[in-house]
Length: 175
Image: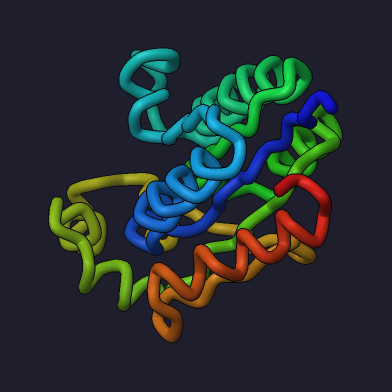
């Protein structure tokens, strides 16, 4: 039986735990499926979206590019994990419509907790006004209304969050 592609789309503030959880999820999907692709927001910005800034328009372009590549992979049977802040509901919903086999994971952590975890010092620079248009500080983040999974990373371990996602993927018939 041919295995179906699907997209696990992580959304949440910078420092909420998207990449950390997605790294653990990759290992679980590899065990079960063998192949999986990861489109991490920071990596995509460096390679596919080089030159884009952080205006709403540029953020939307970046997310649409990630969504387009994810769509191509999913329609060819590949499981894809996308870990990008993707702060705007309308664009996430647009990607959901494009991909269909779409599992939205809201990685929820407060701005204060994300700032506490921030090893790059981005939040401190945003709070001081040095970084403009920083999601959750000077630019909005719109939490999803009805994600398939919510990971509360201030209360759950990475393993607990990953287990919730795996259970949902099993429920939906992807794993």
